[in-house]
Image (tube, rainbow, N blue to C red; front, side, top):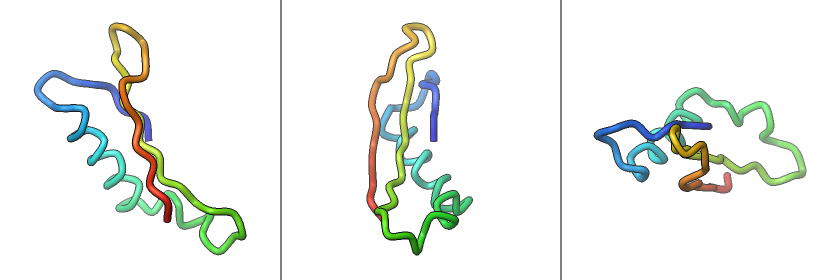
Length: 60
């Protein structure tokens, strides 16, 4: 899930929300049951600098 840093929120809060959104909307369900591992990935970008600030990866 790609997110943009907004004023008033920390990168950690945004990453928590990104991973929560992936879980709540069940984006990964279609990939479960395959032999390959499934990872949830949240990324936060700086809109002005146009660069990746931080990412979080969680294995299912």
